[in-house]
Length: 339
Image (cartoon, rainbow, N blue to C red):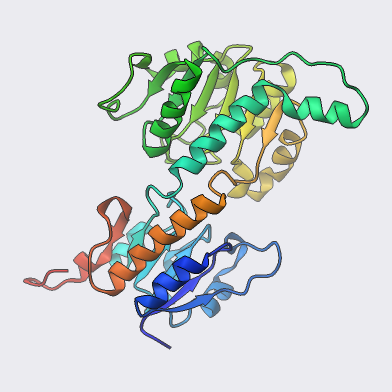
């Protein structure tokens, strides 16, 4: 096989990005997945068969274990078409001399748009209203404005900043809980607060934090109980940041008004699928299947960022610094060598 073979295990990989890879000397192989299948559902043996001999891999949600990386000695770069990397064993990548990249900046606008859409849809009760109309009931349900509400944003990374930028048009008061600094151009209506204050005071809460041991179940029974009775919880970040069972109980009991969910705990824990099934059937939930980044424009951008990372590594160069989450080349270099 070519020492520049790049295997893509994601759907919706556009022609312009394929052309870019080919123009840079890469042999592009698009994995032949069955209808409805995603790479997150592929097992170890299937992935080894698909990736055998590949130098680059553009991946979605497949679990990239140490065992898998060891079985693919020719694989030099693992490039995620996305920004999360909790399913990749970074320690193994570093020790095995591989580079792991993310498509930083590619899907910010798409996820931010989707976040605002979930706020509007759940607040204005679009789902409930249309369901009633289908049944012939054209009575009016009273919704809630986003205009001039207090919105809490947890995490002020690229997507959190993009959401805050969009909220300016709604004249919202914005509360931010973040480990970093507020943007240098933060508007006067943006205030940094502790998480407890944000949860107690916000009408809408939007989560944009990474999933770590510290953030897992950030919203558990106790945290959800701190929210206003009329508040809405929006999660377009990662399943596992919210205890979905606790959220389900709160929504059924009216502890909070509603939720907009693009991610679920069942994505990583199939034993929780029954909880997801109940959540998405609730009238006060707007749900999408981890699709916030999946627009034509967003995927084209992330495809290209992921491809540029692959080409840079195969050329022996440095990908954009914000894209690199593990670089095993440095660990493999001999004294006096540079990478």
